[in-house]
Amino acid sequence: MHSLNDKYPFLIKYLDNAVTSGNMAHCILFYGSDIEAQYELALEAARMLNCKESHSADCQCLNCNWIRENKHPAVLTY
Image (spheres, rainbow, N blue to C red):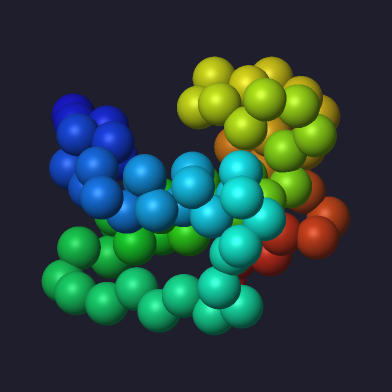
């Protein structure tokens, strides 16, 4: 299975730059036929925005772990 960075390097770089610069759009619309990738990208954006440490893909802070486990009280998926 490919990582999001392998499949969508432009989007991951955009999200990383937006988070580190503090210049994130107030709304991002994902579209297309790959619903799983859209969900993963949205979850990764939420993780990066809520991260309290390095914002890296392997960060183990409480918020990152909660989001990966779908247990974060402020990050809801429907």
